[in-house]
Length: 257
Image (cartoon, rainbow, N blue to C red; front, side):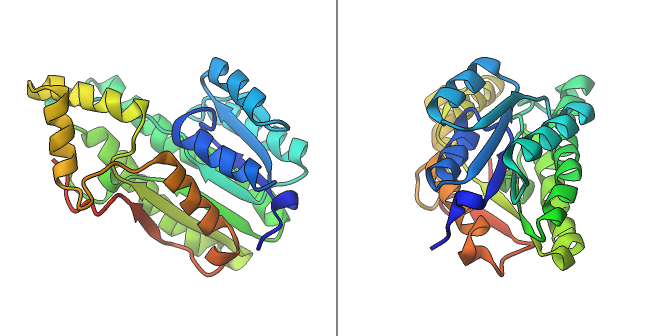
């Protein structure tokens, strides 16, 4: 069993959804915790729910904000051992030729540049601790074709490549880097995605959900807590020899529609 009391962790977009579940798991285990989010109301609620957490607003797509948050968080916690690079957006749901240039760029800025900016700021702190773990939140969309969600899929493929490259680069420093690739995750975000995709296809929400789950072997969505459990596994003693991997947690998703 690991004593997490001296473990310092950052979770980006940690005030809601998957990020909040990961933050709860880490804090519940006794880790020192820092989270950021663009939603200040959600941050205030997270502060109340997670006593002792360092919580600050941060748009990870802004390199100055990203660097400042990581440095302030590491200073407040007394170091950094774990980075969960979780922040991301769904991006537009439309045929590629109908996607606005700014929507494409915003998806890439948050999902790819944001992970780069946060990791770039965090790595020196991890090296000072003599090792640690980075988890990059990707998606099965980065592994398979994902029609009508091309910006998102392309961004998550980039995240997978980032994690794999960093695992080799940081291995000599005893820093493990893995990507997690969730499938259809229950929550408000997937409801918004299904609503947009249903509108684009001209079908009902229920029809869109049925299509999405048709490719899932278990015919069910992934719960955010299950993703948090995988993060704890990868960042704890059981994950000591795991790096450079893309860990799918998707209920057996083999293709997308």
